[in-house]
Length: 240
Image 1 (spheres, rainbow, N blue to C red):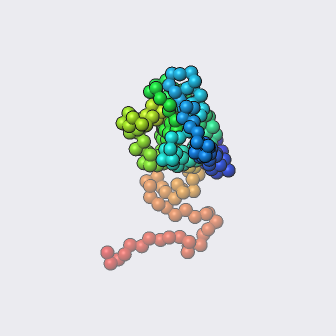
Image 2: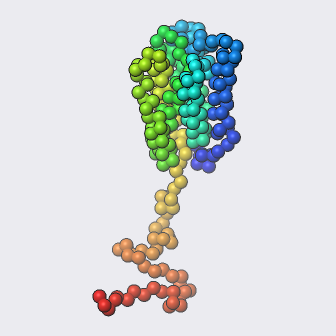
Image 3: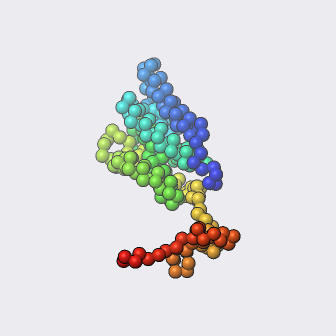
């Protein structure tokens, strides 16, 4: 990932997250408007027909509260993904969705697992661990924001509520961590200071030339400047 291609705001940065949220709300509207339930299209663990839920389940929600609780963090985290990790954003999203759904299918309880919460855990885990692995100051700061705002999500990867698909949450967390490790080298390179560059020479640094070998500040003037009014002269105070 080249630095010049990183942290660039495009129409897709906000457009794709808005599209995801809009599709989820449209699916819910269709269910309410036509009095149908699409819950059967969720992930049904260890049943072949349940594999279709890998693609469909993120767009299906049980009620308005479930939908509302998922769409806000989904929008925020996916926006961060497309802004800070644009070159790998689609890979993370698509591979992560497939792996999260497949893991849920393998380890989940015999029930229809629906909702975008697995994707939310995928994004939160990826953004957190990827920033830590990158050591880029902006991405590390993003990691701290994610853990500060969404750190409480970690409690829901355990079976504390029988009505919550903790298996889907855990699958998203594992997928996000794995993808952060896989793409750990695809990070924006932080800008280098002059003194960090391999061709840096201290004796040619205009700032360092103001210090002698003992670290004392000295006044350097161009050789053609001979006017004494440009020189600073220190005189001790006789009163002291």
